[in-house]
Amino acid sequence: MGAEKLEQALPFWPAAMPRAMALAYTGVAETQLKDWERRGLVRFRPRGPRGQMIAPRVDLDAALASLFDGEADDAGAIEFD
Image (spheres, rainbow, N blue to C red):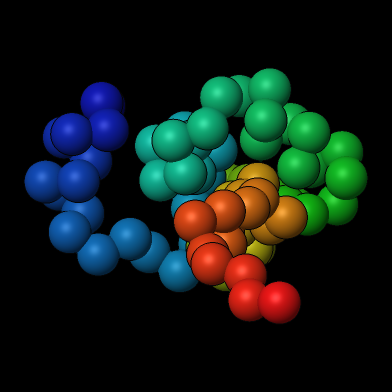
């Protein structure tokens, strides 16, 4: 299922999601998601139906936010002496 179809089917994302849905939710590449897992930012656990591996949305949100931490949010800010 493509990201557009998921957005139509799921106007509100669930609190935890399997890998394919997590990729659609975050919009990152599989390699980025694997990097987050390696670094311990996102952990998939067997908590879904029939032991399906799912990750909490809050972990995905935090990992996604970490991609933008340290960026020059104030690049256009005016500094006063």
